[in-house]
Image (cartoon, rainbow, N blue to C red; front, side, top):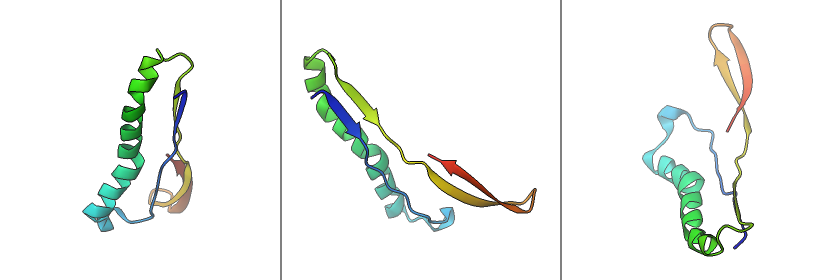
Length: 81
């Protein structure tokens, strides 16, 4: 194993107050736990190779977000990871 690319991820547009615990658990499992488990699984082989040329990449998606800014009374746009 020379290269591991952790590229799993998901996002839903749900208001914070409407997120069910099952939705939260799914989000954490896909975005965090999956990367942890796969990385943990390949580490023994990478270490046995003494890390010679081995790399682990974690990719994330940037997505646009819009929100209402009450101080300027305008819709704001930005990105979050």
